[in-house]
Image 1 (cartoon, protein in one colour):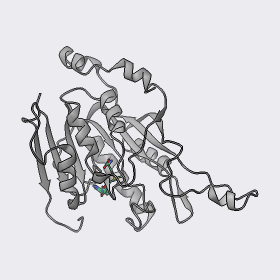
Image 2 (cartoon, rainbow, N blue to C red; image 1 turned 60 degrees about the vertical axis):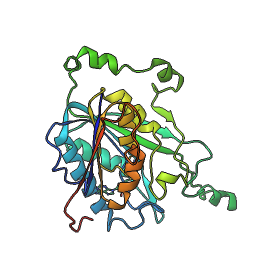
Image 3 (cartoon, rainbow, N blue to C red; image 1 turned 120 degrees about the vertical axis):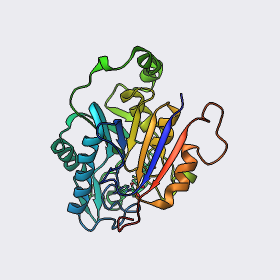
Amino acid sequence: MATSHKLIIGNAVNMQEIPDASVHLMVTSPPYFNAPFDYKQLYDSYEQYLQVIEEVAKEVYRVLQNGRIVALNIDDMLVNGEKFPIVADATRLFLDAGFRYRDRIIWKKPDGYLRISRRSGVLLQNPYPMYFYPDNTLESILIFQKGKFNYRSIPEDVRLASKIDLDRFQREKWYMTLWEMVNVLPGSELEKDIAAFPEELPFRIITLFSYVGETVLDPFVGSGTTMKVARALGRNSIGIEIKESLVPIIRKKVGFDGQLTLGQQEDTLEIILREKTKER
Ligand SMILES: C[S@@+](CC[C@H](N)C(=O)[O-])C[C@H]1O[C@@H](n2cnc3c(N)ncnc32)[C@H](O)[C@@H]1O
């Protein structure tokens, strides 16, 4: 079945192009406040950052169908020696927007992953009490739900077409609250300078929380990972991204930059460039 994809270039605090209750799943990874390396000084203050998360949460609540899921990949962030409790604050903001808190999955990266800094090195230099700062190899995937899902609302053929591969589910231990997934390696061509998540993350979320033919939203779409995976899984997608310069990268990643492969020729990509305002 053909899928359709929409890329909106603009600020996700406003989702004016998306009608109420028209989205079946949201999966995203917003900026982690002013993360060193990726988003140095993106926001003037932590309060301003939380305001963006609050407005996005309200808009997502509006566009999501009843019963459906939000998966928010996020983590607390150390900026200039101060740790910001982003997971706790974002949880509160999504609860305040009307969602129910359903689960928290921990994503564990391989032990060798240390992109930002080897903080534990401080203790190696000073092997005495009070010098301990652990290296962080974990992130959260917060799962929220809008009301209760009506399992009977899905036609039988759609249910069958969306059946989950139980071998993979068991083998890769999707059933646990700890997901071991390899991060995107620094220097990967399409994700250069974008804090992208690995395809495995939206793959699991889209497989577990949406049906074939439904629509998946990523309001901080970055390089377009969610859109790519949605397409591969026979779902429609909507991506929002504030940086217009990412359009060619997203186009390429989602597979709309050249010859379409057989069976995907009917798929469409619409790009909406909002009026240039001070948001870009
Ligand atoms: C952590 S990255 C997402 C990476 C994405 N998951 C991927 O795999 O490529 C966050 C993205 O959100 C974008 N962004 C930041 N603030 C935004 C806003 N208010 N509205 C829309 N996009 C925003 C950034 O430019 C960045 O590309």
